[in-house]
Length: 261
Image 1 (tube, one colour):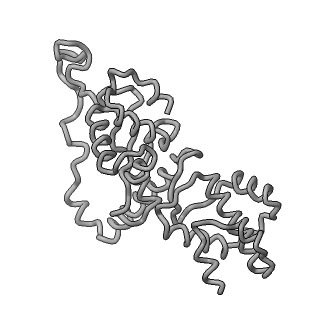
Image 2 (tube, helix red, strand yellow; image 1 turned 180 degrees about the vertical axis):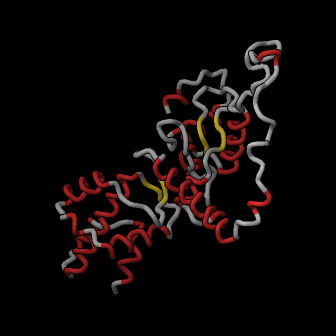
Image 3 (cartoon, helix red, strand yellow; image 1 turned 60 degrees about the vertical axis):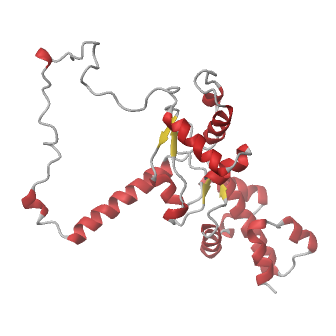
């Protein structure tokens, strides 16, 4: 966010677009990558309409302050394709054109590079990536699918590892809590580590996976998990008083109260 605040006024004169950029930066990682709040979330943060937010995101992308990032990050957290927001990366070079420069003309203003006689020594364009037709016939559809699944799995893992500890995300089926964050929350709640059983953990994830609009940080999800476990222990003991009910009241789990009647 400090990067967005430090942008000179001549780089971004539109105050609404600057507001959207500041809020978007709040969801990005420390390297400026992986911000994927929905348009409705940004609308709530900025007070603008969703349509205006989308227009301003387009404007920010056109001037080179943001660009579309690794969309696999959103896919890790949100299963439904039609509900995934666009993942953006902040261009921390302060508005520089994110498109890579070609080698031609990169060394001087004459359009010639430093290679001898201006001749590029690389192999023919595309030669290295050309497939061998005889080998392609030997690869079965099953092998191709397995390779594709492996590639997707690697992308998802990379997306998970790239998440900043402070970055908020929706719950997803393969989420595992940070050991330190969970241990801290259990200590605060005075609960032993074995309180988080596989059954409670599965119920917790299953409930919030069905609520993709709910987002939180890694530590925030650990807090919610311990809160869930503590409430379930009280319910199982059958000793929940009115005060206890107020303590564990959570808009995300109101349906549990009705289910117990």
